[in-house]
Image 1 (cartoon, one colour):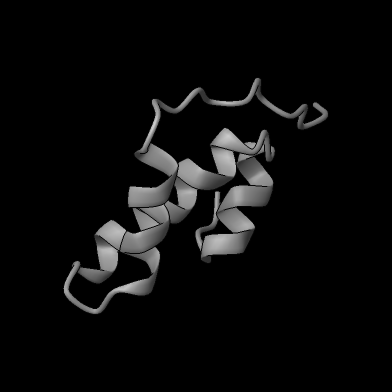
Image 2 (cartoon, rainbow, N blue to C red):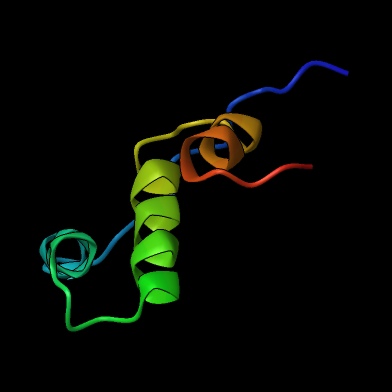
Length: 59
Protein backbone atom coordinates (compact mmCIF):
# COMPACT_ATOMS: atom_id res chain seq x y z
CA UNK A 1 0.00 0.00 0.00
CA UNK A 2 1.44 3.35 -1.02
CA UNK A 3 1.92 5.96 1.65
CA UNK A 4 -0.07 8.90 0.37
CA UNK A 5 0.53 12.27 2.00
CA UNK A 6 -2.18 13.18 4.44
CA UNK A 7 -4.03 16.43 4.02
CA UNK A 8 -2.14 19.25 5.70
CA UNK A 9 -3.10 19.76 9.31
CA UNK A 10 -4.59 23.18 9.94
CA UNK A 11 -3.02 25.35 12.62
CA UNK A 12 -4.58 28.35 14.31
CA UNK A 13 -2.92 31.72 14.14
CA UNK A 14 0.10 31.74 16.41
CA UNK A 15 0.30 27.95 16.76
CA UNK A 16 3.13 27.54 14.27
CA UNK A 17 5.27 30.14 16.01
CA UNK A 18 4.67 28.54 19.41
CA UNK A 19 5.46 25.04 18.13
CA UNK A 20 8.63 26.27 16.44
CA UNK A 21 9.65 27.91 19.71
CA UNK A 22 9.16 24.57 21.50
CA UNK A 23 11.53 22.86 19.06
CA UNK A 24 14.30 25.36 19.89
CA UNK A 25 14.03 25.75 23.64
CA UNK A 26 15.65 23.70 26.37
CA UNK A 27 12.85 24.52 28.83
CA UNK A 28 10.33 22.18 27.15
CA UNK A 29 10.65 18.44 27.73
CA UNK A 30 12.33 16.58 24.86
CA UNK A 31 9.13 14.60 24.20
CA UNK A 32 7.14 17.79 23.73
CA UNK A 33 9.73 19.10 21.29
CA UNK A 34 9.40 15.90 19.24
CA UNK A 35 5.61 16.21 19.31
CA UNK A 36 5.93 19.81 18.11
CA UNK A 37 8.10 18.63 15.20
CA UNK A 38 5.49 15.99 14.32
CA UNK A 39 2.65 18.54 14.30
CA UNK A 40 4.68 21.02 12.24
CA UNK A 41 5.50 18.33 9.66
CA UNK A 42 1.85 17.24 9.52
CA UNK A 43 0.84 20.87 9.01
CA UNK A 44 3.26 20.99 6.08
CA UNK A 45 1.52 17.96 4.53
CA UNK A 46 4.40 15.51 5.06
CA UNK A 47 3.38 11.84 4.84
CA UNK A 48 3.09 10.01 8.17
CA UNK A 49 5.83 7.47 7.37
CA UNK A 50 8.19 10.29 6.38
CA UNK A 51 7.41 12.13 9.61
CA UNK A 52 8.22 8.95 11.55
CA UNK A 53 11.57 8.70 9.73
CA UNK A 54 12.35 12.37 10.44
CA UNK A 55 11.76 12.07 14.18
CA UNK A 56 13.31 8.62 14.53
CA UNK A 57 10.25 6.46 15.09
CA UNK A 58 9.71 3.12 13.42
CA UNK A 59 6.46 1.56 12.30
